[in-house]
Image (cartoon, rainbow, N blue to C red):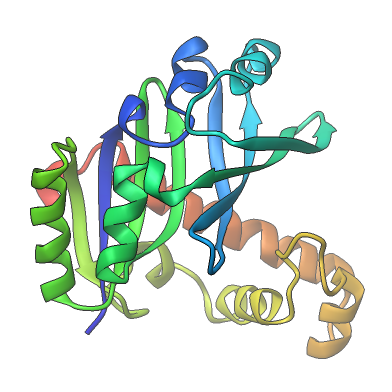
Length: 222
């Protein structure tokens, strides 16, 4: 059965390490990661914090970044698309080698908090050996099987929240650009757009609360 592992990792040993070190008050949240057949890995991420301008300037000299584009700039932060060669980053190479997938990653205060999906226990063990070979410093925070009953970020959702969250994901609501609208989701479930908005917001709050509570203080859970 697939396994989800949550790790804490020094920012200097992962992507955007130099930019994050430039201003530790900036938080980076990876929204999604796209890989292609040319060994190029493209993350889409939000950057937020008082030192956002310094972070933006530091991106230009960050050795892990081959190209970076600012896609949005709003009160919520700046949304970027960056590109780098996976072979330039030992962690990305190790993940690809064992067939693992980064589900989400948040960088702040000199640390990356990363949630990774492994196909099975054997791939997790192989990943551990590769990290030792590459001299990567990982702290395992939480480990659980990838099903809706054991994932603490999902099991606290109500049936209505889970339904709207799964529909929004399946219909491409979280894609960039979005492939559906809140109105279309409301029509699909035959409820108002206001109800859709409330359920999505509460579902987001529940998932994020459970995820970050686990990442930031439950090392004993493992």
